[in-house]
Length: 407
Figure 1 (cartoon, rainbow, N blue to C red):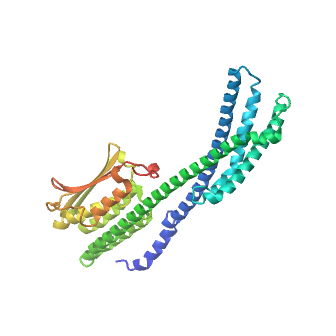
Figure 2 (figure 1 turned 90 degrees about the vertical axis):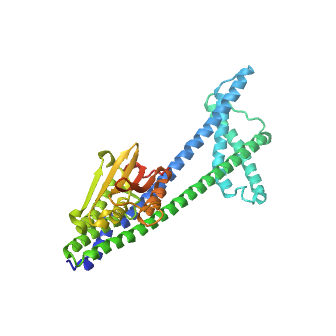
Figure 3 (figure 1 turned 30 degrees about the vertical axis):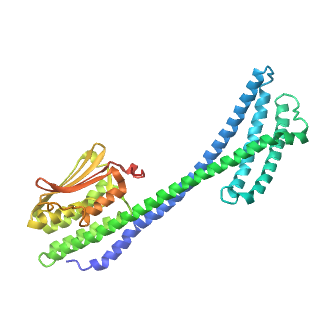
């Protein structure tokens, strides 16, 4: 028996934690990727805002141009089409530019927070400033652009009175801007609340998943150590081999501890480590067959999903009861879903017993599947002719699909 294991094992675990694929480094890489993702999302949001601003501003200017020009045509007072195009576009662009200045003011002093009465005077000052600047912009920009377009000198009328003439239109424009900004603000706040609620629900679900895994790991470890201790004096070599296999299994479990789903090949590797422990115990008295359809090999599955099902088959099947038993594991793709099935040749559960209401392995597996996939997954366990069967049916997903939320 190897006596250096007690010294070497912590070192191995520390080395495991420092490897490129360790959970600590994966978490750091995940934080960096999340920060980069947030920066990319902010840049994309700014691009969307600029494009929306340009589209709304130019679209409004063109709509006003068509309205004014077609009005002149229908009245028989048609003039150069370029003149109304310049006048309406400069008006729309001026309002759009002033909106960029009003937007932070409105977001800083909203009227829907219970302080509207105290903020109305500030809005009246902002309205006066908006009206003055918009009218001044239209006069200045048109005075430059219309002569450049070869349409002669631009006459905006009596300028001091022009400010009062444009004031009603400016009040309507200002009101629309304030109302639209508040509406967008409320919509964004509602979306953020929904997102926070979804994130909280996801966080709670993941906490439940971690708790379920914490239930499974001591349960499995206790059973494995109990099995090893039963062979310690009868067959020290077999017990030593089982300890080696258990150490390998715990290393794999450590690598997948922070991952809800793993490739099926990784899960099969984990199962093989557990079966090696059982073979060291039962020898050729335990017959295990693992059948995996080629079409299913690309799938991802919940980590440590097969081991508790096989452990249940060992403990409650004929292998534990009579010392000789048979277990069949089948993984197949069925109509867009993935089927994981474990059968044993034991006597099955007692009549009337709810196998999911008692114990840890099967009930925890059923809860994990529900938290991961919701109604898209199904888990059933019960007696079948010739033994007992546990079967999980879950959405067929590949590594590229793991970012999608379950239905």
